Image (cartoon, rainbow, N blue to C red; front, side, top):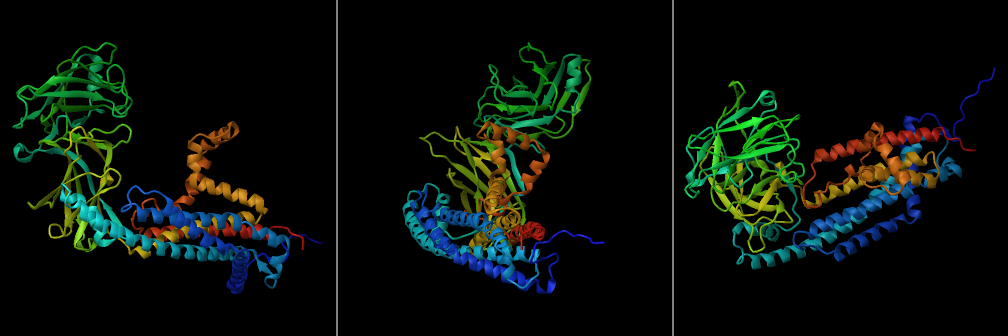
Length: 623
């Protein structure tokens, strides 16, 4: 009896032979590389270099000292990314079907040729071609960046001479002084603060002698907060009127007004307090507050009633459902109030009492749009301060004679045009009385850099206190707002890492193209790889924003709601193999991150190459 077996592609074996694999794959890779040379693809490299240089020279710069080198690095990497995209989409999808159909592949080597050998050889040859082109563009761009750096350093030295006599604060010339001395080709590693921002009150010499008290100051947005979600307030208020009894500590600074202090007592659902302001109350929905005077005893009592359409004057209502917090804010400039642990009691309708355990949290107001905590400007003490803490920092990682502390602000509001914005940073070595205070002008379009001399701090713990000194102004803060800027890699190594990231990006595209083109025609392969490229770079943007066309919008809505589609978009992130956004600004990429990216690219490339080999072995082509 005769048996039939599945027909294999003529000239291709089902199993690659390990002994001859390297030689066969290497020969195919060499042929692929030579074919790229015959197609004059090498012309793209000098053309890309010219485009990168012309684009950088013709683009306007906001600040030629601080923006020139980052812009040049970003432009060159962008041009190299486009070059990798062209090679990975258009050229990598072209040769395989053509060679298969014309039987050119059958004459490269003695038969049989393994499908895995052919697919891997194609991938290696294309990757070698791309690496050679990126080397040409990268070397030319590096020489161009070196020439730009010399001009930037000379310009920085000239500006430094002009700025020093005019600087009102010595710390304001720190950034330009660093460029003039060290040049712009400096890279950094950043260490974010281990804790912060924590908010408090800076009293100065008029500090109260009261330990274990959480303080807030008026006109700062600081509030004392207690979590009442699990307390009995809602249940007791539903059965009848009850009261909140709050024991406050009042501090009267020397420059405070003689009028009796007042506080705002507020009940709110924390999930809704950032919603759009309601009209005509001027407060978000689910937020109820009253303003009450603070007697000499500091004991404040506020009645609480169930939620109803008509609220009596001076009475709080508890929001229904969700969380529940109690906030206390001081009213008036220079007014300071505080609270100790167990300062809040809930008094029920029958006179029963329940204490709210624990210290209150001190929280700052937040910008509704950005979500950043606000450091409000106050020219006189007492005023709001934000505290960041670094744990034990090894001295060996600091390097150089001084360490730069980079402070990143979000200037959500600006001071009046007639007033110069001012801020203050105080550096404290915990456990010692030593401290350094620097006043500076916050930068609006780039981070503020302050220098801490190594004679003051040479590693170990460090505390940084920030204060805004400009009235009618505030600064938005996040945990990354204060970072240590430590020495990074030499610029040549740094730039080479960026090119390496682009090469990994190109390798991913080439692997996808080898897989797709092993079973499709050139035109269909280009369309398929281009679609995967768009989804892997801006896929979420395409689905989250307006889609042109009703049919495309209909398809996008259904794909966006599919769990498997979302999983696909989450794992097909080609853009993740490119250098991060902060790379052009000089933030170094760690070797561990490079190794992780290379490992991920290797695994994914092997999977696509294996799929391409399977398609080649099962592709039926006439002999």
